[in-house]
Image (cartoon, rainbow, N blue to C red):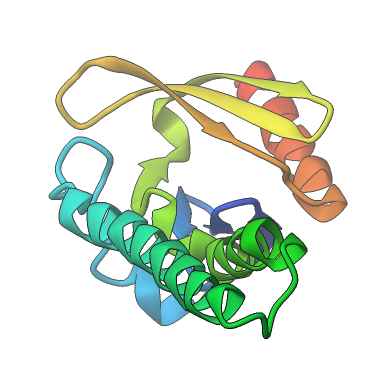
Amino acid sequence: MKEYFKYKFGYVNIDDENLYFTSTGNWSETKNMKEKGLQKQKSFKKISIKVFFSILVLAITLIILKHLNSGEIGSFSIIGLPIVGGYLAYKYLRTELGSQFKLPIAKINSIEILDSNIDFVFIDANGNTKTYQVEAADEKGIEIITKIKASIITN
């Protein structure tokens, strides 16, 4: 079995043994992926993306203020353009904000599905019980995870 589905912060690739939380959904991305608890945290990457958003909004605001003083732009743009620009940049880059790790299906204790959100309760590589939430999973993902949940309950 090889399946995948999209969620708010990326993709979940699924084979017979693992769930892989990726940013692109590309199977080649899963080859060297480490289990949750073993992988290095990519907090620098997440912080740099957040700094990029902030700088983008600030730059757009400064450009608007410069043109507003000369009377070239209306006052609506002071609020509208930075918000729209920041939102579009966030939407484009949000898959980079999601965690990237593999989760062995055998280590999943429970799966809870509420609307389009999926909560996985599992044992990480360090032996700790963790919860990871997949937000805004697509319909295909809900169907796939429902089947996995049923197989976990029967085993």
